[in-house]
Length: 456
Image 1 (tube, rainbow, N blue to C red):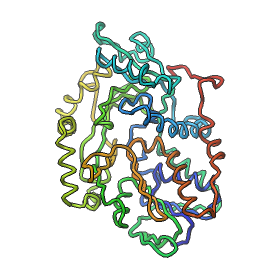
Image 2: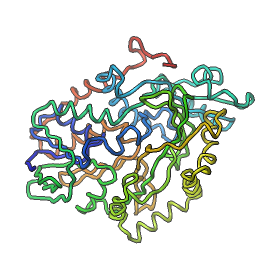
Image 3: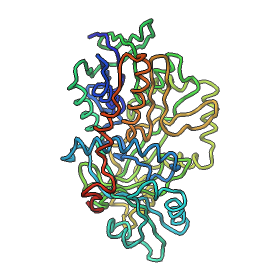
């Protein structure tokens, strides 16, 4: 196959699909192709077993500053609005109570300050500070068996969206394909990207694509492709593989524990699976792996391409891993994969959420978890937590660790504006229509019939 397109998007996960939907539906770009190397879209990190199924608003993520929460909130509301608009039967998501739990005087004080003094209560009108009795009403197992003299507080909201990002990805692509001039190619691996006078030539396992502009939304591989074109030379990746433990029906919604600011990917939480609320997942664990995709030895070489094997990369890794918080955490997480020993070592984290859980109640989840590439800035020799984007000459590279899935539509909106600049005004983006299709459908506190009952 081959073709000439105005825009080619590389990557068929939630990020690439969001941009395809946005550009195909709300711009007048005439021809768009999406290229995915797997035989189907959403096969890697967007698959429902390979992520935490969380729509992050910033309300219960205690590593977020208020400013970060404000940014993430709009992105989450865009996606939540899409789900409210197009998923009335709850095939792609569910709404359940969620809370961040503080146990003990110190954690209770932190949550009280966060809610009252730091402004999170004002930013999130549905967020409530609740005590032991209300926690027990919503999540009986969280209180059952806990020392009655131990102080407890939770920040709780009914707006707990659990999401099958794989199904959302398919929905976005399906809607995009309803528009003229949109082609989706699966089983098509990119082998080379070459700048031309008119844009880019993208060589693939199934032929050549020529385009005026391109967006690479291929997760960890985005930085790999960027480096091949001379971009992102001051960045490397620290791939973190997440896994989960499973238990029977213990929780009605999502229960977070307080997060460490240096470890934003580390807070253990418990929640019911999006498609089977009789299964409770606890995690994630997080271990460093030298691959760009979970369980694929073939991507070790890809990791080495991104790593670069240079002095700056080694010094950055050494600086990061010598941190007195991060190093013990990394070492502990290596243990969780060991038979018998792993579940025993992880059990106290589960009991922080559900005190009555015993060792025989949990088991290592097989086939769950993906790789999240934490971005390392080799100039600062530090982790650059969150999403990263490299904008080049008529090309964008999106590297999207958490909360990339939650803010996929916001990223798509921002990238679409950049693409319109690339096209020098030849095409237009109807942002008003985009918002009407998405965020305008998000239920506000004064929406009739809302809020939903907290134990739904």
